[in-house]
Amino acid sequence: MIRTENLTKRYGKLAALTDLNLQIEKGKVFGFIGPNGAGKSTTMLILSTLLEPSEGRAYICGYDVVKEPKAVRQSLGYMPDFFGVYDNLTATEYLDFYAGAYNIPASKRKSLIADLLELVNLSNKSDAYVDSLSRGMKQRLGLARCLVHSPDVLILDEPASGLDPRARIEMREILKQLRGMGKTILISSHILPELAELCDEIGVIEKGKLIACGAVDEVSVHTRGITIMEVKILNRFEEAQEILQQFPHVKRLDDKNSHFRFHFTGSEADKAELLQRLIQAGIPVVHFGDSKENLEDVFLAITEGVGN
Image 1 (tube, rainbow, N blue to C red):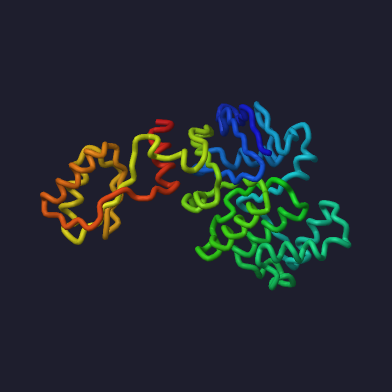
Image 2: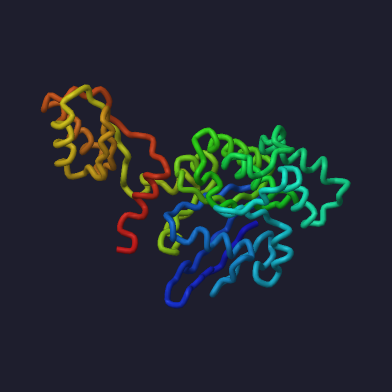
């Protein structure tokens, strides 16, 4: 459904995107991970026909984004990280305007808009003016706008950006529903742990280059010889911290007050040695073991040293 071949975008001598090759199958949710300026939005703009690539090709539902932009736009819904709204329209009028832009017959719009507002949990705001909505509600209305023409592909650039925790949960639940409807979704986010729950596959992009790509379980720090570990102790935190810092296989030590979390590059025998050192020092250890990694751990481990 989404395919790129050596996709490249340059601004003079600056390469915003370099030889990007992606293949996202129908019904899959693909998460794009990367810091600001990594190339995520550039990729999404090209796929949405809003920016021409310098080199390479990209396809949406088999349509070339450069040669067949009209067909591409009928096949996808694009939600940018920031979008304007018409404040003097109600939520219903806002969606009706876009439905008209997609040539949806007036006779079908009322039921369509009602269904969309129900999907994004805004049925009770149908007659509310857009400028009276919270940021989270505006984001959900923007998502509904992407769906007026029932596209097969959704491209969502930071859909949870700037939302409070409750609004992020609401957005995540809506995206789960869309996945259940068989939509193919390309989504970027800085809220990395949330992508793990949503996505079938992830891609890590840094400095315009895709440096890791695959199923969430496959793109793992374990494949790079790193284990995320967690140690909980009752007291004597400073002494425990010193032991951990001095141990050669402990990296990225993070003091969480009640416990420590870190990357461990050693073997099982090395883990046993570390635990023995803590116990011999009289540290009251109540938990010592592997911690469930999240996508932030994956990103930090994969990108370490990139571009240096």
